[in-house]
Image (cartoon, rainbow, N blue to C red; front, side):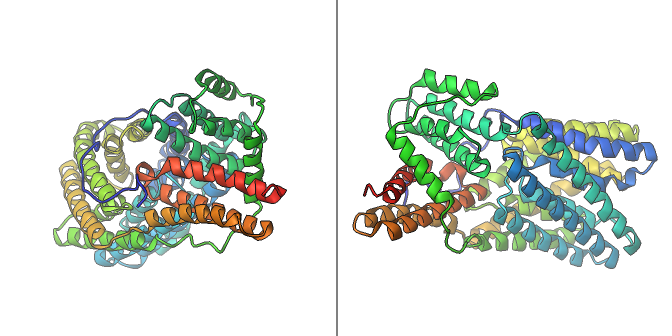
Length: 511
């Protein structure tokens, strides 16, 4: 077993620890406020706030992809927009075709499982599947007629298109901003290496930066990133690394000289880019998690119905949010979810009277909650849910007003039901493949390097390149599965570095 991979232990260590705010939280906040606020205020002016749920669904796409380079961001965000539009279509159509709450719960649960599969397979990243599931489940329980469904789909598509334009707009000013920011963060983290924890944080930042650089491939950034990698194996030149990072953040790409070993690593990296990867096994290890979401969401919604809760889809969303890649992570998420939701209900109770003073007040409160959420959720998930909860409850006011006490009670019961079913499903449906696959990928690279000494250069280089591609894919899947805290980041960075150099030596004939 590789040291550092998570093991289920159902611990509460660090569950409520408040971390540093994410560097780009305000980008998500501002984008979401613009994407949500503009169409919602237009609907207020038109007197059609009842349609705000559907245009807001598309606008919520503005929460995604802010860490991705723009070239990749454009594609991924477009697919998220398509997924969101399809989600609203399925939810609205189900609402129009049946009045059976039990059947609608089943539809919402299937959508929840599909959303998890889509987000993991497409490597969507935070906020992941929960936003899609919330929108789809809510639409399924908002009354609709078949004739209204095309309009709902069109509004969602328009909202998603506007969100795409908002999120892509900064590319006009800083077209290489995301990848430069990622490399600058890696350089700064490398400059701070003094002990094992700081080395682990630097390795994680370096791995994240490589993902951004490989997706964008801009000139010069890979040369800077290998400078950060050197700090993993020898004392860092902190002043120099910080100076390089400062240059990047100022909008420049500093020119650096590379050692022969660093040149070899970049040559090996180029060979990996052009290697023909083996058939993807991307879905391996995802099915236990998808099944976990399906079972917990289905049971949570049905139990909520049996208890007489008026909004059973909230239990579906909670169960989907709780289900993580391991029992330990699911347990931590459950505790954070309960704590944050109950605190959020108190905030909702305070905001509800203000929200009912008028449509503009309602929209502005939702936008304020969204803005604060992005600042808080990167510090700790439970802090984010304190503001997500009132925002989600306030959004139900778009369709119709309901007694505030009933909304609070329903959400409290659904939180408990969803958390319990989510934890039970995670304990009964085990998933160890994500961690094991990363371990096997690491071992495969090292075995390929060992065999290269006695093998002809061409097949040895092909095998090593294929192993490196497999390692990167396995590590990316593990990050998407929220194994981030337990990944052997230092070993991944070292194995990739040494593998690229070995690959370059094989291709140049030096071996």
